[in-house]
Image (cartoon, rainbow, N blue to C red; front, side):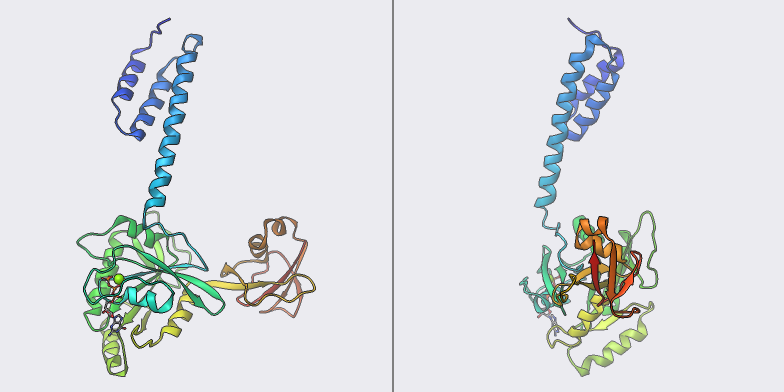
Length: 328
Ligand SMILES: Nc1nc2c(ncn2[C@@H]2O[C@H](COP(=O)(O)OP(=O)(O)OP(=O)(O)O)[C@@H](O)[C@H]2O)c(=O)[nH]1
Ligand SMILES: [Mg+2]
Protein backbone atom coordinates (compact mmCIF):
# COMPACT_ATOMS: atom_id res chain seq x y z
CA UNK A 1 0.00 0.00 0.00
CA UNK A 2 1.55 3.33 -1.01
CA UNK A 3 2.08 5.70 1.90
CA UNK A 4 1.02 9.30 1.71
CA UNK A 5 3.83 11.25 3.28
CA UNK A 6 3.44 14.86 4.45
CA UNK A 7 5.24 17.47 2.32
CA UNK A 8 8.08 17.99 4.85
CA UNK A 9 8.86 14.25 4.74
CA UNK A 10 8.82 14.27 0.93
CA UNK A 11 11.24 17.21 0.95
CA UNK A 12 13.49 15.50 3.53
CA UNK A 13 13.59 12.36 1.39
CA UNK A 14 14.59 14.43 -1.64
CA UNK A 15 17.43 15.99 0.36
CA UNK A 16 18.54 12.57 1.57
CA UNK A 17 18.68 11.19 -1.99
CA UNK A 18 20.73 14.20 -3.11
CA UNK A 19 23.20 13.98 -0.19
CA UNK A 20 26.77 13.14 -1.27
CA UNK A 21 28.90 12.49 1.81
CA UNK A 22 28.19 9.89 4.47
CA UNK A 23 27.83 12.49 7.22
CA UNK A 24 25.41 14.51 5.08
CA UNK A 25 23.41 11.34 4.34
CA UNK A 26 23.20 10.54 8.06
CA UNK A 27 21.94 14.03 8.90
CA UNK A 28 19.34 14.02 6.10
CA UNK A 29 18.16 10.53 6.91
CA UNK A 30 17.64 11.43 10.57
CA UNK A 31 15.61 14.42 9.39
CA UNK A 32 13.57 12.21 7.03
CA UNK A 33 12.81 9.63 9.73
CA UNK A 34 11.66 12.29 12.19
CA UNK A 35 9.34 13.82 9.53
CA UNK A 36 7.46 10.55 8.96
CA UNK A 37 4.23 10.34 11.00
CA UNK A 38 4.22 7.45 13.47
CA UNK A 39 1.40 4.96 12.82
CA UNK A 40 0.92 1.35 11.77
CA UNK A 41 1.05 2.20 8.05
CA UNK A 42 4.55 3.66 8.35
CA UNK A 43 6.04 1.03 10.72
CA UNK A 44 7.81 -0.91 7.99
CA UNK A 45 9.16 2.16 6.24
CA UNK A 46 10.52 3.62 9.48
CA UNK A 47 12.13 0.30 10.45
CA UNK A 48 13.79 0.05 7.01
CA UNK A 49 15.13 3.56 7.24
CA UNK A 50 16.43 3.08 10.77
CA UNK A 51 18.34 -0.01 9.60
CA UNK A 52 19.84 2.04 6.76
CA UNK A 53 20.77 4.76 9.26
CA UNK A 54 22.61 2.37 11.57
CA UNK A 55 24.53 0.93 8.58
CA UNK A 56 25.60 4.42 7.55
CA UNK A 57 26.66 5.24 11.10
CA UNK A 58 28.82 2.15 11.44
CA UNK A 59 30.41 2.86 8.03
CA UNK A 60 31.24 6.38 9.22
CA UNK A 61 32.77 5.00 12.44
CA UNK A 62 35.00 2.54 10.56
CA UNK A 63 36.21 5.28 8.21
CA UNK A 64 37.03 7.55 11.13
CA UNK A 65 39.02 4.82 12.88
CA UNK A 66 41.00 3.99 9.74
CA UNK A 67 41.76 7.68 9.17
CA UNK A 68 42.97 8.13 12.74
CA UNK A 69 45.19 5.06 12.68
CA UNK A 70 46.59 5.96 9.28
CA UNK A 71 47.83 9.38 10.30
CA UNK A 72 51.57 9.53 10.99
CA UNK A 73 50.82 12.34 13.43
CA UNK A 74 48.85 10.13 15.81
CA UNK A 75 51.46 8.87 18.20
CA UNK A 76 50.25 6.85 21.17
CA UNK A 77 51.59 8.05 24.49
CA UNK A 78 54.05 5.71 26.14
CA UNK A 79 56.05 5.87 29.35
CA UNK A 80 55.81 8.61 31.96
CA UNK A 81 54.90 11.45 29.59
CA UNK A 82 54.91 12.63 25.98
CA UNK A 83 57.32 15.46 25.23
CA UNK A 84 57.31 17.06 21.76
CA UNK A 85 60.46 18.60 20.32
CA UNK A 86 59.42 21.57 18.17
CA UNK A 87 61.01 24.56 16.51
CA UNK A 88 62.23 26.05 13.26
CA UNK A 89 64.21 24.06 10.71
CA UNK A 90 67.85 23.05 11.20
CA UNK A 91 68.06 23.84 14.91
CA UNK A 92 68.96 20.24 15.86
CA UNK A 93 65.60 18.70 16.83
CA UNK A 94 66.27 15.35 15.15
CA UNK A 95 69.86 15.35 16.41
CA UNK A 96 68.51 15.76 19.96
CA UNK A 97 66.17 12.77 19.60
CA UNK A 98 69.00 10.66 18.16
CA UNK A 99 71.26 11.48 21.11
CA UNK A 100 68.73 10.96 23.89
CA UNK A 101 66.87 7.88 22.59
CA UNK A 102 67.36 4.83 20.39
CA UNK A 103 65.36 6.40 17.55
CA UNK A 104 67.16 7.28 14.33
CA UNK A 105 65.48 10.12 12.46
CA UNK A 106 67.43 11.70 9.62
CA UNK A 107 69.79 14.51 10.68
CA UNK A 108 71.12 16.81 7.95
CA UNK A 109 72.68 20.15 7.33
CA UNK A 110 70.05 21.04 4.72
CA UNK A 111 66.77 22.62 5.88
CA UNK A 112 63.39 20.83 6.02
CA UNK A 113 64.82 17.37 6.54
CA UNK A 114 62.09 15.99 8.81
CA UNK A 115 58.57 15.64 7.38
CA UNK A 116 56.95 13.25 9.86
CA UNK A 117 57.12 12.90 13.64
CA UNK A 118 59.29 10.17 15.15
CA UNK A 119 58.94 8.94 18.74
CA UNK A 120 61.71 7.56 20.95
CA UNK A 121 62.05 6.60 24.61
CA UNK A 122 64.45 8.54 26.84
CA UNK A 123 65.55 6.78 30.04
CA UNK A 124 65.61 9.12 33.05
CA UNK A 125 66.86 7.28 36.15
CA UNK A 126 64.42 4.38 36.50
CA UNK A 127 61.64 5.56 34.17
CA UNK A 128 61.17 6.17 30.45
CA UNK A 129 59.88 9.40 28.96
CA UNK A 130 58.66 9.59 25.37
CA UNK A 131 60.26 12.23 23.14
CA UNK A 132 58.75 13.04 19.75
CA UNK A 133 60.79 14.70 16.99
CA UNK A 134 58.59 16.78 14.67
CA UNK A 135 58.79 18.51 11.29
CA UNK A 136 59.85 22.17 11.45
CA UNK A 137 57.27 24.76 12.45
CA UNK A 138 57.09 27.19 9.62
CA UNK A 139 54.74 30.02 8.82
CA UNK A 140 54.39 29.07 5.11
CA UNK A 141 52.45 25.94 5.96
CA UNK A 142 51.44 24.71 9.38
CA UNK A 143 50.23 21.12 9.41
CA UNK A 144 47.02 21.06 11.50
CA UNK A 145 47.81 17.55 12.70
CA UNK A 146 51.17 18.72 14.02
CA UNK A 147 49.35 21.34 16.07
CA UNK A 148 47.04 18.64 17.43
CA UNK A 149 50.04 16.53 18.39
CA UNK A 150 51.49 19.52 20.25
CA UNK A 151 48.14 20.18 21.98
CA UNK A 152 47.92 16.60 23.21
CA UNK A 153 51.50 16.55 24.53
CA UNK A 154 52.52 16.89 28.17
CA UNK A 155 55.47 19.20 27.55
CA UNK A 156 56.89 21.22 24.65
CA UNK A 157 60.65 21.45 24.16
CA UNK A 158 61.08 24.45 21.90
CA UNK A 159 64.53 24.25 20.30
CA UNK A 160 66.31 27.33 18.89
CA UNK A 161 69.78 27.70 17.37
CA UNK A 162 72.25 29.89 19.26
CA UNK A 163 74.36 30.15 16.11
CA UNK A 164 71.45 31.45 13.99
CA UNK A 165 68.96 34.10 15.21
CA UNK A 166 67.64 32.51 18.40
CA UNK A 167 65.54 35.46 19.61
CA UNK A 168 63.70 35.75 16.31
CA UNK A 169 63.25 31.97 16.20
CA UNK A 170 61.86 31.91 19.73
CA UNK A 171 59.48 34.83 19.28
CA UNK A 172 58.24 33.65 15.88
CA UNK A 173 57.56 30.13 17.11
CA UNK A 174 55.73 31.28 20.26
CA UNK A 175 53.65 33.70 18.13
CA UNK A 176 52.80 30.93 15.68
CA UNK A 177 51.70 28.60 18.49
CA UNK A 178 49.60 31.32 20.09
CA UNK A 179 47.89 32.10 16.80
CA UNK A 180 46.75 28.48 16.90
CA UNK A 181 45.57 28.81 20.51
CA UNK A 182 48.49 26.93 22.04
CA UNK A 183 49.79 28.91 25.00
CA UNK A 184 52.90 28.10 27.03
CA UNK A 185 51.89 27.34 30.60
CA UNK A 186 54.12 28.80 33.24
CA UNK A 187 54.93 26.52 36.20
CA UNK A 188 53.08 28.90 38.54
CA UNK A 189 49.82 28.80 36.53
CA UNK A 190 48.99 25.22 37.41
CA UNK A 191 45.24 25.14 37.00
CA UNK A 192 44.74 27.79 34.37
CA UNK A 193 41.88 27.08 31.93
CA UNK A 194 40.34 28.86 28.97
CA UNK A 195 37.65 27.62 26.62
CA UNK A 196 39.53 28.18 23.35
CA UNK A 197 43.14 27.90 24.49
CA UNK A 198 45.27 24.87 25.21
CA UNK A 199 47.89 25.51 27.87
CA UNK A 200 50.95 23.30 27.57
CA UNK A 201 54.09 23.52 29.72
CA UNK A 202 57.01 24.69 27.60
CA UNK A 203 60.73 25.03 27.96
CA UNK A 204 63.22 26.52 25.57
CA UNK A 205 66.42 24.70 24.62
CA UNK A 206 69.07 26.97 23.20
CA UNK A 207 71.03 24.45 21.16
CA UNK A 208 74.47 24.60 19.55
CA UNK A 209 75.97 26.18 22.68
CA UNK A 210 78.90 23.87 22.00
CA UNK A 211 81.58 25.21 24.37
CA UNK A 212 82.61 28.07 26.68
CA UNK A 213 83.25 30.30 23.68
CA UNK A 214 79.51 30.50 23.00
CA UNK A 215 78.47 31.12 26.65
CA UNK A 216 78.73 34.85 26.12
CA UNK A 217 76.28 34.64 23.21
CA UNK A 218 73.87 32.84 25.51
CA UNK A 219 74.21 35.51 28.19
CA UNK A 220 73.53 38.24 25.64
CA UNK A 221 70.46 36.34 24.48
CA UNK A 222 69.15 36.19 28.06
CA UNK A 223 69.60 39.93 28.48
CA UNK A 224 67.90 40.78 25.22
CA UNK A 225 64.88 38.56 25.67
CA UNK A 226 61.78 40.53 26.59
CA UNK A 227 59.94 37.66 28.23
CA UNK A 228 61.03 35.49 31.07
CA UNK A 229 61.12 32.05 29.41
CA UNK A 230 62.52 28.96 31.14
CA UNK A 231 65.74 28.57 29.10
CA UNK A 232 68.37 25.87 29.08
CA UNK A 233 71.54 26.17 26.97
CA UNK A 234 72.52 22.79 25.50
CA UNK A 235 74.66 21.26 22.80
CA UNK A 236 73.71 18.03 21.14
CA UNK A 237 77.13 17.85 19.49
CA UNK A 238 79.18 18.14 22.69
CA UNK A 239 76.45 16.83 25.08
CA UNK A 240 76.54 19.99 27.19
CA UNK A 241 73.76 20.05 29.80
CA UNK A 242 71.98 17.02 28.37
CA UNK A 243 71.93 15.29 31.80
CA UNK A 244 70.48 18.45 33.30
CA UNK A 245 67.92 18.52 30.48
CA UNK A 246 66.64 15.08 31.55
CA UNK A 247 66.19 16.30 35.12
CA UNK A 248 64.37 19.45 34.00
CA UNK A 249 62.04 17.42 31.76
CA UNK A 250 61.24 15.16 34.70
CA UNK A 251 60.48 18.18 36.92
CA UNK A 252 58.39 19.99 34.32
CA UNK A 253 56.24 16.89 33.76
CA UNK A 254 55.19 17.25 37.40
CA UNK A 255 55.23 13.54 38.07
CA UNK A 256 56.17 11.40 41.04
CA UNK A 257 57.37 7.79 41.30
CA UNK A 258 55.71 5.60 43.88
CA UNK A 259 56.77 2.03 44.70
CA UNK A 260 54.37 -0.73 45.57
CA UNK A 261 55.37 -2.97 48.45
CA UNK A 262 53.55 -6.29 48.73
CA UNK A 263 53.05 -7.22 52.43
CA UNK A 264 56.15 -8.98 53.81
CA UNK A 265 58.27 -8.21 50.75
CA UNK A 266 60.55 -5.46 49.48
CA UNK A 267 59.38 -3.03 46.75
CA UNK A 268 60.88 -3.37 43.28
CA UNK A 269 63.11 -0.29 42.87
CA UNK A 270 63.04 -0.66 39.09
CA UNK A 271 59.27 -0.67 38.70
CA UNK A 272 57.82 2.56 40.08
CA UNK A 273 54.26 3.64 39.32
CA UNK A 274 54.24 7.09 37.76
CA UNK A 275 51.55 9.48 39.01
CA UNK A 276 50.77 13.18 38.72
CA UNK A 277 52.19 15.35 41.52
CA UNK A 278 49.59 15.69 44.27
CA UNK A 279 48.17 12.17 43.78
CA UNK A 280 46.71 10.39 46.78
CA UNK A 281 46.92 6.85 48.13
CA UNK A 282 43.50 6.14 46.56
CA UNK A 283 44.77 7.24 43.13
CA UNK A 284 47.86 5.08 43.57
CA UNK A 285 45.66 2.10 44.52
CA UNK A 286 43.57 2.64 41.36
CA UNK A 287 46.72 2.63 39.27
CA UNK A 288 48.01 -0.61 40.83
CA UNK A 289 44.74 -2.45 40.30
CA UNK A 290 41.04 -1.66 40.07
CA UNK A 291 40.35 -4.16 42.90
CA UNK A 292 42.77 -2.35 45.18
CA UNK A 293 40.84 0.88 44.83
CA UNK A 294 37.47 -0.75 45.50
CA UNK A 295 38.58 -2.93 48.41
CA UNK A 296 41.28 -0.79 50.00
CA UNK A 297 41.26 -1.36 53.79
CA UNK A 298 44.51 0.24 54.86
CA UNK A 299 47.76 1.64 53.55
CA UNK A 300 51.19 2.11 55.10
CA UNK A 301 53.77 4.54 53.75
CA UNK A 302 57.55 4.82 53.98
CA UNK A 303 58.95 8.10 52.70
CA UNK A 304 58.31 11.83 52.90
CA UNK A 305 56.65 13.41 55.95
CA UNK A 306 55.71 10.12 57.65
CA UNK A 307 57.44 7.79 60.04
CA UNK A 308 58.44 4.44 58.54
CA UNK A 309 55.43 2.28 57.87
CA UNK A 310 52.92 4.88 59.06
CA UNK A 311 49.26 4.00 58.52
CA UNK A 312 47.66 6.64 56.30
CA UNK A 313 44.20 7.43 54.96
CA UNK A 314 43.05 7.16 51.35
CA UNK A 315 43.43 10.91 50.83
CA UNK A 316 47.05 11.00 52.02
CA UNK A 317 49.10 12.89 49.39
CA UNK A 318 52.12 10.95 48.12
CA UNK A 319 55.57 12.22 47.14
CA UNK A 320 58.29 11.17 44.72
CA UNK A 321 60.07 8.10 46.09
CA UNK A 322 57.36 7.00 48.55
CA UNK A 323 56.86 3.28 49.18
CA UNK A 324 53.27 2.15 49.79
CA UNK A 325 51.90 -1.11 51.15
CA UNK A 326 48.24 -1.59 50.24
CA UNK A 327 45.98 -4.05 52.05
CA UNK A 328 42.58 -5.13 50.81
N1 LIG B 1 77.37 22.84 16.08
C1 LIG B 1 76.27 22.12 16.34
N2 LIG B 1 75.57 21.60 15.32
C2 LIG B 1 74.47 20.88 15.63
C3 LIG B 1 74.04 20.67 16.97
N3 LIG B 1 72.91 19.96 16.94
C4 LIG B 1 72.63 19.70 15.63
N4 LIG B 1 73.56 20.25 14.84
C5 LIG B 1 73.61 20.22 13.37
O1 LIG B 1 72.54 20.99 12.85
C6 LIG B 1 72.08 20.46 11.60
C7 LIG B 1 70.59 20.25 11.63
O2 LIG B 1 70.27 19.22 12.54
P1 LIG B 1 68.87 18.45 12.50
O3 LIG B 1 68.80 17.62 13.73
O4 LIG B 1 68.66 17.77 11.20
O5 LIG B 1 67.89 19.71 12.59
P2 LIG B 1 66.29 19.70 12.65
O6 LIG B 1 65.89 20.76 13.61
O7 LIG B 1 65.76 18.34 12.90
O8 LIG B 1 65.93 20.19 11.17
P3 LIG B 1 64.54 19.94 10.35
O9 LIG B 1 64.28 18.47 10.32
O10 LIG B 1 64.79 20.51 9.02
O11 LIG B 1 63.49 20.69 11.08
C8 LIG B 1 72.88 19.15 11.40
O12 LIG B 1 73.95 19.42 10.54
C9 LIG B 1 73.40 18.83 12.79
O13 LIG B 1 74.60 18.07 12.79
C10 LIG B 1 74.84 21.24 18.03
O14 LIG B 1 74.57 21.13 19.22
N5 LIG B 1 75.93 21.96 17.64
MG1 LIG C 1 64.62 17.13 11.78
